[in-house]
Image (cartoon, rainbow, N blue to C red):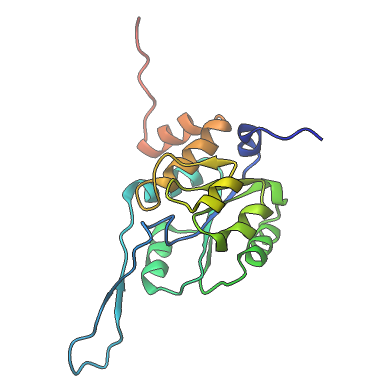
Length: 191
């Protein structure tokens, strides 16, 4: 059977799942200790790129469902996921392949209609399970070797936006999604 090109793989995608730390963020974890004498627990915070947030809206406009699968549990991630209105949110996951398969099935899709964006070896099983494996620019070498597509930007710097843009352009939906997002058609240019 002939190998599919990366564009042919991207044309089939209806579901985009992704890791968080190193993909949606730059991978750095920040913790603030509670105030002395406080009963509060440690405070965690992360930085998210606005381009990645916009990409979720663009994916939705292009008919692509989105979600995250991450090993860590984080209220910061839960807040961001709610803000982005992600369809699927799974935290505290050791076996990303199992959750990937469960989400694909719940969405009523075939594995080749789903993509996974990752950066480290824990993401490989989910990346291998789908039709399009995407590594971010800052991914580990082992992950890049198995990716069909590597984003031009690093995690936390617009990598998810790169993935969404690549898929929507392969599907011929990019221009329409952008026009819907900004609420106007591109002006016709005269020569």
